[in-house]
Amino acid sequence: MTAATNPDYHMTYSEIAEVLGVSRQRVRQIEQNAMRKLLENDDYKAWADFSSSSESRDLDQLLFF
Image (tube, rainbow, N blue to C red):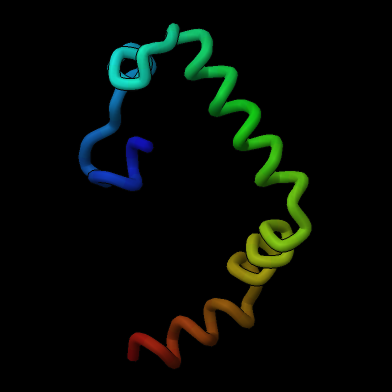
């Protein structure tokens, strides 16, 4: 929620909680659940592995230079 809307501005848990109408603790729980689901997702793992590989860096050089 923070970086997606504006990478230079990061909302605090309190600000997010106020917008969503939940507690700060609930915001933390939602974030933890989302991160757990991402890390358990095989497609995400494959993308994360590729994005940190030398193949990905080679592709970046081809695309941006």
